[in-house]
Amino acid sequence: VVVTPFLINCQVKMGSVEGDVEFVTENETAKAVLTGVRYVALFAMYGGFTAVVCSVFLIEHPKDPALTPPLSTAMLCTMNLATQFFGVYLGLFICNTVKQYVQSSMVTKAMAIFEAGQKTVMFAPMLSILCWATRM
Image (cartoon, rainbow, N blue to C red; front, side, top):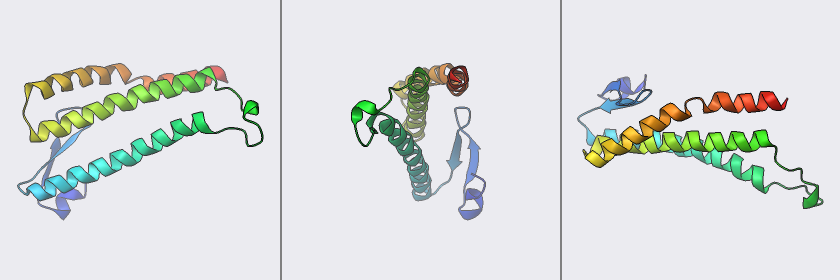
Protein backbone atom coordinates (compact mmCIF):
# COMPACT_ATOMS: atom_id res chain seq x y z
CA VAL A 1 0.00 0.00 0.00
CA VAL A 2 2.83 2.39 0.82
CA VAL A 3 5.25 1.40 -1.95
CA THR A 4 2.77 0.70 -4.78
CA PRO A 5 2.14 4.36 -5.79
CA PHE A 6 5.91 4.79 -6.26
CA LEU A 7 6.25 1.65 -8.40
CA ILE A 8 3.30 2.16 -10.73
CA ASN A 9 1.11 5.11 -11.60
CA CYS A 10 -1.78 4.63 -9.18
CA GLN A 11 -3.52 6.19 -6.23
CA VAL A 12 -4.46 4.41 -3.03
CA LYS A 13 -7.88 5.28 -1.64
CA MET A 14 -9.88 4.01 1.27
CA GLY A 15 -12.05 1.08 0.33
CA SER A 16 -15.76 0.80 0.87
CA VAL A 17 -15.22 -1.21 4.05
CA GLU A 18 -13.14 -0.36 7.10
CA GLY A 19 -9.57 -1.62 6.72
CA ASP A 20 -9.75 -2.06 2.95
CA VAL A 21 -7.92 -0.08 0.30
CA GLU A 22 -8.61 0.42 -3.37
CA PHE A 23 -5.98 0.96 -6.03
CA VAL A 24 -7.15 3.49 -8.63
CA THR A 25 -5.26 3.27 -11.91
CA GLU A 26 -6.03 3.60 -15.58
CA ASN A 27 -3.96 0.53 -16.39
CA GLU A 28 -6.28 -2.48 -16.06
CA THR A 29 -3.35 -4.90 -16.19
CA ALA A 30 -1.75 -3.27 -13.14
CA LYS A 31 -5.08 -3.38 -11.34
CA ALA A 32 -5.43 -7.09 -12.11
CA VAL A 33 -1.86 -7.79 -10.95
CA LEU A 34 -2.45 -5.93 -7.67
CA THR A 35 -5.65 -7.90 -7.12
CA GLY A 36 -3.72 -11.11 -7.86
CA VAL A 37 -1.03 -10.21 -5.32
CA ARG A 38 -3.70 -9.55 -2.70
CA TYR A 39 -5.30 -12.92 -3.40
CA VAL A 40 -1.95 -14.77 -3.25
CA ALA A 41 -1.35 -13.27 0.21
CA LEU A 42 -4.90 -14.15 1.21
CA PHE A 43 -4.56 -17.76 0.03
CA ALA A 44 -1.25 -18.08 1.89
CA MET A 45 -2.82 -16.88 5.13
CA TYR A 46 -5.94 -19.01 4.74
CA GLY A 47 -3.85 -22.01 3.69
CA GLY A 48 -1.81 -21.70 6.88
CA PHE A 49 -4.96 -21.38 8.96
CA THR A 50 -6.49 -24.45 7.29
CA ALA A 51 -3.29 -26.47 7.76
CA VAL A 52 -3.21 -25.70 11.48
CA VAL A 53 -6.86 -26.60 12.00
CA CYS A 54 -6.50 -29.83 10.00
CA SER A 55 -3.34 -30.81 11.88
CA VAL A 56 -5.14 -30.44 15.20
CA PHE A 57 -7.61 -33.09 14.11
CA LEU A 58 -5.19 -35.37 12.21
CA ILE A 59 -2.10 -35.56 14.42
CA GLU A 60 -2.09 -38.69 16.56
CA HIS A 61 0.24 -40.30 19.06
CA PRO A 62 2.96 -42.13 17.08
CA LYS A 63 2.73 -45.40 19.03
CA ASP A 64 -0.97 -45.74 19.67
CA PRO A 65 -3.79 -43.45 18.48
CA ALA A 66 -5.69 -44.26 21.66
CA LEU A 67 -3.01 -42.37 23.62
CA THR A 68 -3.82 -39.13 21.79
CA PRO A 69 -5.36 -36.71 24.30
CA PRO A 70 -8.83 -35.35 23.52
CA LEU A 71 -9.17 -31.78 22.30
CA SER A 72 -9.87 -29.27 25.03
CA THR A 73 -12.99 -27.16 25.00
CA ALA A 74 -10.84 -24.03 24.78
CA MET A 75 -9.19 -25.35 21.60
CA LEU A 76 -12.54 -26.25 20.04
CA CYS A 77 -13.99 -22.84 20.91
CA THR A 78 -10.92 -21.08 19.52
CA MET A 79 -11.10 -23.01 16.24
CA ASN A 80 -14.84 -22.33 15.98
CA LEU A 81 -14.37 -18.58 16.54
CA ALA A 82 -11.39 -18.45 14.16
CA THR A 83 -13.37 -20.24 11.44
CA GLN A 84 -16.24 -17.79 11.80
CA PHE A 85 -13.85 -14.82 11.82
CA PHE A 86 -11.92 -15.90 8.73
CA GLY A 87 -15.10 -16.97 6.92
CA VAL A 88 -16.76 -13.59 7.33
CA TYR A 89 -13.65 -11.70 6.25
CA LEU A 90 -13.19 -14.00 3.25
CA GLY A 91 -16.77 -13.30 2.14
CA LEU A 92 -16.23 -9.57 2.63
CA PHE A 93 -12.96 -9.67 0.67
CA ILE A 94 -14.58 -11.53 -2.22
CA CYS A 95 -17.55 -9.12 -2.29
CA ASN A 96 -15.18 -6.12 -2.35
CA THR A 97 -13.29 -7.59 -5.28
CA VAL A 98 -16.46 -8.38 -7.21
CA LYS A 99 -17.81 -4.89 -6.50
CA GLN A 100 -14.70 -3.32 -8.06
CA TYR A 101 -15.44 -5.04 -11.37
CA VAL A 102 -19.25 -5.49 -11.38
CA GLN A 103 -21.93 -3.16 -10.06
CA SER A 104 -24.86 -5.25 -8.87
CA SER A 105 -27.54 -4.92 -6.22
CA MET A 106 -26.91 -8.53 -5.21
CA VAL A 107 -23.26 -7.74 -4.44
CA THR A 108 -24.33 -4.70 -2.41
CA LYS A 109 -26.74 -6.84 -0.37
CA ALA A 110 -24.08 -9.49 0.19
CA MET A 111 -21.64 -6.80 1.33
CA ALA A 112 -24.19 -5.49 3.81
CA ILE A 113 -24.62 -9.01 5.20
CA PHE A 114 -20.87 -9.54 5.55
CA GLU A 115 -20.40 -6.09 7.09
CA ALA A 116 -22.97 -7.02 9.74
CA GLY A 117 -21.10 -10.27 10.22
CA GLN A 118 -17.85 -8.33 10.54
CA LYS A 119 -19.30 -6.37 13.44
CA THR A 120 -20.41 -9.67 15.00
CA VAL A 121 -17.07 -11.49 14.79
CA MET A 122 -15.00 -8.43 15.67
CA PHE A 123 -14.54 -9.73 19.21
CA ALA A 124 -13.69 -13.32 18.25
CA PRO A 125 -9.92 -12.93 18.84
CA MET A 126 -10.53 -11.48 22.30
CA LEU A 127 -13.01 -14.23 23.14
CA SER A 128 -10.48 -16.83 22.03
CA ILE A 129 -7.89 -15.39 24.42
CA LEU A 130 -10.53 -15.37 27.15
CA CYS A 131 -11.15 -19.10 26.55
CA TRP A 132 -7.45 -19.83 26.88
CA ALA A 133 -7.04 -17.61 29.96
CA THR A 134 -9.96 -19.38 31.64
CA ARG A 135 -8.38 -22.75 30.88
CA MET A 136 -5.11 -21.71 32.53
